[in-house]
Every structure is written in C-alpha cells, then in structure tokens.
Length: 258
Length: 240
Image 1 (cartoon, one colour):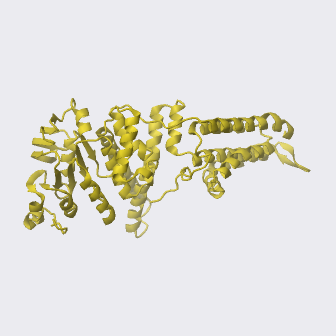
Image 2 (cartoon, chains in turn red, yellow):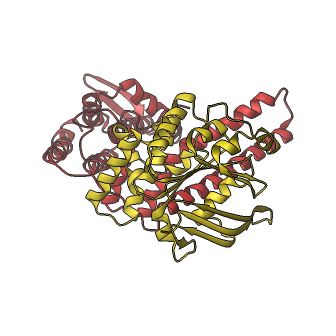
Image 3 (cartoon, each protein chain N blue to C red):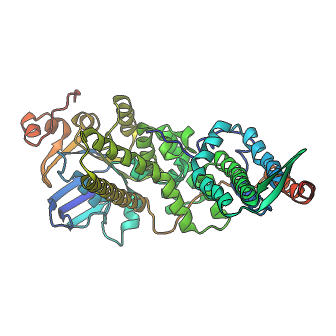
C-alpha cells in the first residue's frame, strides 16, 4: 500500500535538499523560536517572516498544494485554540492596516496572531522535512547530541508505522468484508477490542523477529552507524543568510511595523 | 575440515511444551544447496532458528565446527547468516545502505571496508541505485533481494533462508532463483514450494511433525509422488 510519507519530497534534488541536515534543523529551530517570541501585535511582521520559508519551499520545488494540505491536516487543534481567544478576551482595541483602521477585540487579534505564527512555523517545519530525508535528519540530530536511544526509537517508529497502518487496514478490511449488519454497540466494542488485541500481538511478534534479525547480524546492544554528514561552504552560506534575514527583520523591520 | 552444519539428536519444545523438533540429526557439507521441505508447521523455521542459536533445545548443533552456545554466538553469527521469512522484519534501518552496513559495522570493520562490503552486496543483488532509499519504498522483490544483501555484506559461509519465495511474483521468483544459484555459499532453504526447491537444491530433507522423514538427493525425494502426497506436499512441475 502507498502512504503519504511526510518526507515524500525529500528524495528530490535541489540546492536546499543537498544542505546538511544539522544546519537546516538549527535554522528552523531558531526561526521557530524567533517567530514564537514575536509580540501579539505583529501580524505584518509575521507576513514578512513567512517570506523566508516560502522562498525555501519554492526554491526546493515543493508543491504549495502539498504544503497547505499538510498545514490543514494538523490545524484543527490550533484552530480550536485560536478561536477560543475572542470568547475570553473582549478588550476593545484599534486595529489599522495601511490606510484602513477599525475597532476589534484583543481576543480576535490574538486569534489571528496564533494562526499566523502557526502557519509560518509550519511552513518552516514542512520546508525542513520536505527537503531532508528522515534518516539524514535522525543522523543530524544524533550528531547534535540527541540521546541515541531516542534516535533509535524514532528510526523504528518511522520504519514500522507504515507496516502497522497496513496491518490495521487489512484487519479493518477483513472485518468490513464479513460485517453484513449492525451488531450493536457492545458487540462492536468487543470486536474492536479483539482487533486491537490482534494488532498488538502481531506487533509483539514483529518486534521479536526484528530482535532476531538484529542479533543475527551481530547486534550486541551498541548501535553503530556510518555518518555521511559534512558541513560545507554552502551550508555556512545558508546559515549566514538565514541569520541575516531573521536578525534584519527582528532589529530593523519590526520597530518600523510595530 | 569441519562440516557446515552438524546436528545431533536435537530436540526442541515451544515454551508451552508443544514439541517442535524431535531427535533431529543432520549434517550439511560446505557448498551444498539444501532444501528443507515440509508442510506448514513441520518445524522448518524452528530448525533454521536452532542453527542460528535462537532456539535452544537438547542435543548438539555445530556450525562450521563451533558448537552453538552463548560463548560461540559471535563466531557463529559471522559464519551463518539467517534471512527471515518476512523481509520487513529483516530491514529495520531508515535506509537500505544503513541496513546493509549494520552487520559489517557490528563485526567491527573499518568504515572504508564497510562501504566496500555494502557496495559489493548491493551490486550482487542489483540494488546499487537504491542504497539511499528507505526500505518501505522498495517493492516486494526488491525487499527480498535487499534482505539477502544484508546477509551477504557479512560474507558468511552459510546462508539460511526461510520461505524466500513467499509473496513473490514469477518474475521476481526467477530473479531470486538466479541470484541464489550464483551464490557460492552453503544454502539451506526452507520452503514448501517444490518448484522453487527443485530448481535450486541438490539435496532435500523432508520434515513433518518435527521429525526428519526423508533425506537424500532432491531429484529422488521430490519425484516420489506417494511420499510427497502423504506429507501434504506436491510434485515439482518444473523439470528436475
């Protein structure tokens, strides 16, 4: 079965794709921290910040339709959070945009800032995962000092989540093929519990087989990998450009637009 | 010279007490291509696991002269490579390169040696261009070949394969047969596909209910219609 992998465009080739995963990760991390720390009255500055990840996505030839689909996929939680703001904060505030000005509430302003920050940081995050193979990202994180055990767990998660989804899908298909009428809530609940149990047992089975496969190839508890990561001049140039872009907006554009 | 595999009176029971293998004695010469045939539940996979030291029972199992015990496990793992039935269990690393490099790195080889072993193994199975791919991006046939590459990179003398033809279409099955025929190692293949076994093996061992029923030339065993039918198997349609 084919799955919509989060890094499905990471196998393309572009200058952005070729950058070192550590540099890209650190740039996105700093970018996110800067965007999150922006004051609540900074919608116009947020729009300026969006230019950075947007340019990266276009340069790396990541389809924008895919990007917005991914943002929509993870947006429900943030939308609920953002839309709750106008309900509890109704302090009147004057808002102006270019020649236009109108009265609104602080809650609505917060709502749009939360949504704006979410979209801008998501753009950066999608830019990172769409231009970096998950394996390179893990190798980069390991080099940056993330605990090895966590890296191994993430690697296994990414490797086997699709296998698990496939199995769950097959179980659901098997159930749908034999379910000819509604069996009532209690029976449905019992069936669902059995399905989950079956999935759980098969997962344990898979884990045992993986353990055998690892031991058969000499695994003794020490995780060994070959690192292919290398920071080059273009990586430093990218980091410098990102630093100039972020600090330029923070120190020069923000005071003007605020 | 020690034999590739030597098993004497090996008996194994599952943890719940069900007998899986009873009094198995078997010896395999180096370079031999052996087919372990038998119906489902005959004990073929368990016997392969016993050879690799994963199923501990009573009796003696020797791999290339080394007795299978916790003291010799490292030596055994470098001499015997076992390929599991489901390639998804065998390929657990984020990329194919990392997966094939996993064994050689655990053997303590230098990075350059590891790279050359990986390149050689991937070239043997025809997957050189897929080195940076994630295993879940490979087709069933490619996954099977990749699983074999993970073993080849460790340069074992003996390779055990559990139902290697499972869920492969005829083209991929033929590709796999060509690959396995080209390997100089001792091959022990557990299968219930008689055509596949007949095309590859020079010797066959028929297992049923955990016991060895017949052991001999593949051609003779697999053309015995009564024997095959009695143990739930079929005659090979491919010309032996």
